[in-house]
Amino acid sequence: MVAVAGGPMDRRTLGLLQTPPAATAIIARQPIFTVERDLFGYELLYRSDSAGGFEDRDGSQLTSTVLLNVFSELGLARVVGDRRAFVNLPREFLTGQLQLPECPEQLVAEILENVEIDEEVLAGVRALKDSGFLIALDDVVFSPQLEPLLHLADIVKVELPAVPTGELPAHVQAFRRWPVKLLAEKVETDEQMQECVELGFDYFQGFLLARPMTMKRAKLDVKAHVVLQLLAKLYSRDHTFRELTEIIHQDPALCTKLLRYMGSARFGVRNVTSVEHAIGLLGNRGLKTLLTMVQLAQASDQPPERITAALVRGLMCAGIASRHAREIRDQSYLLGVLSELDAILDEPLGEILTEMPISPQLRAALLSHDGELGALLLAVTAYERGDWERVQFRQLPLGVFGEAYLAAVAEAEAMARSTAV
Image (tube, rainbow, N blue to C red; front, side):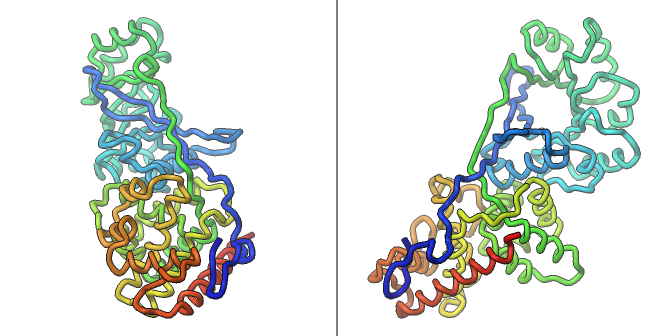
């Protein structure tokens, strides 16, 4: 139940639907080991918990889904720690039509065996290598057609079952003409492992060592309308960070993804105070990369009703701060939105916030209700519960909170109507 001054009101009366089952962000990771059996990294693999799997998605959608789930849902640190993350890249990512997250210190760009090698691909791979990404050739056996890529590759993943019996030493000798590391892929027997060690392979991956492990997390769906609005604004010549912020404020899910993305991609930021601050740090290119991944990965354009409560709380906090506490206005929207994440994701808020580079003031307000931000959050949540005696913030009358709440509900419903197709 939520309340307005004068008595409680059911969410359905206000058009705020009950939370439906959450969608799931899901990937698999398969470890890659050194010859000493130390962990080197993981290959990240697409997985789906719905019928159909790969059938209705092309390579760009699959890769975008993997990257989005890792960087904006599960968190890169949670998935691979400080190890390398190998990701299969179709042509569009290699040629620069689609951008990778700016994380060359961990991402390894895997070139699929079915990518046509031409000048456009080679130029794109050179650009990735110049940006610091390691380049890996995936599922290969030696052939002269690979030579242009071998000049650029750092790692060659040799698919053991594809090499004819007895020919592996010759393939290894051929690859050794280039200064590449060799990774034995699909190692399934002790005999294969021993042969590869004797031939000088550097890395090993396969069922003998470890099978892929699935990782899941409740997923926040972003409104397609908001993404399209943002992309249109970003590609126009005339826009400000404030205009972009106002659009992003329509969607708490996108705010959450934005913060996780910055935390995962190692931007070196640990003190984000607002959405506008985050946009400024990320820049136009980084925001375009995130939005494009969201657009490709997400199939549904329906508004995420389960986070409507977070939107209302964020708008209510922002509405009160804008009129009565302008020094915390910019942080107040994030304050309200993030305070609902534990209920949405069914995880402790402290764990969720470790993946987000928010300011110490925001973190303290959310976890301990410290400072002016903490006092605002306490007052707003007390109002939602109808605990009138605890609705205390800068000696504001109860009517101010009622007005702010009803205005937030009206704005949230207007946003939902504008994005419903």
